[in-house]
Length: 599
Ligand code: ATP
Image (tube, rainbow, N blue to C red; front, side):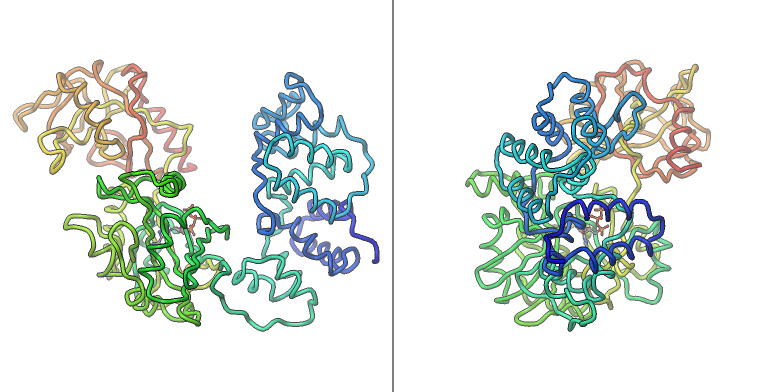
């Protein structure tokens, strides 16, 4: 094996793996490749192509399917109007007439390439391919990227190019887990990767399978694979799973999972995929350097945006924009806020083997919280005591399953994503998702199945919304009769949106004097309904449709007339564009619930 490893050999391995049904067979093909076709000095060059999503040596390609489609069209000198070009652009719909391969960009591209590339391999070596991929990642313009793609097309056949496209999209769909690849490569590979997130180091250090590697601890400056949460269906299952443990419930914040590595005045922000998000530095590093009282330390937590004018966390999605605004010195009511919920390293030692309770003590002593900038999530401390009375509770020690139910309900009503349950006696384990942390989230009906419901009544709010309607009772149509079935919906609209809807509907609000007066007869409400809105809409044809999402685990309704009631409904959009009679009807709603529940 003196020659350089050819990419065609790796492609044959991919094909073998795809064809083998069992994991054991796939693993043995991989072993054969390592032993017979790949020099140890080429291990990293090859394995980074097999596990492209774990490779951090190369930057991002900036090529998602749509950009890749236009770049390939140009690289193949095709007209944008040609049938094949349209196939690439509309890859979600699939190739040819049959719609085969719909949604799989690489397969649609392979169909197109087959008509344009020869059968024979151009003899590209693995090292050449890596150099070209480096160029692809470092080139800034799309024209440069197109040039690299056309070089690749010249040096490959359609089969090889398809694999390259899959590498660029970082998913080879080989049907073998990364865990199996690691185990076959070396018994210590997964452990070493989990604590270093460094594929090159793993391939170089562990090139001799028979030599065991001494367990390595985590280090400041090297991303650690984050501990993750296992999903559970409900509070009872969660409580059972954590039987006998001291259980902590925390809000599941919807931001960016970030590990902060502080080494003196050097601060790194590693994401869940171990990318270093240096853009957070401008806004956060001073705060970290001054308020984290350890020279060297690793914090685990979530990066969010705190809205100072509304005194609440902003919804997911504005982290990058706020980081940029801070970099450019722009004034804003919004600021980045890091919530540390764990600590992994202090001074010169890893603390992941200590219990969560002990790590909380360390967090308390090491991090000086600053409201809305740097918070710690520890029971009776930091975030839980910073905010004013009446603010949400962010974490709690659970004594029973009811505590979990209540916390979950309150958290969802507060528009958070869900909750995380943690065993306070557990250590922090890199890359673990075995159930030390559990997550409970509502399962929202997915987009594409909008629930368009009609506002039929309203409830007065309190506090900020005192004296005005702040929650709605909504109904479905019963076709052909106009009766409707109600469900109360409250959250999801901004104050301005709510005000606009209420102003529009105000002329149609009618107060009702219970129990003397029954609701309007065109609303079908069961006799034992306990739900009594403060006002009813006196003419449904003047009302407004709301698009809502809801938990699919609907519950049979005793309170309302509809056969099911929705849990955690939230308003997505106000549909001023839809006339009232286009709201969902009861039958379609039942079908939707059944298909979502798989019944
Ligand atoms: P999802 O897609 O549901 O957000 P995920 O696959 O990103 O889940 P999970 O392991 O299921 O990740 O959930 C853990 C994630 O939840 C963490 O990566 C972190 O970003 C986020 N998170 C928010 N709040 C907490 C918290 N209090 N403790 C731990 N993780 C939290």
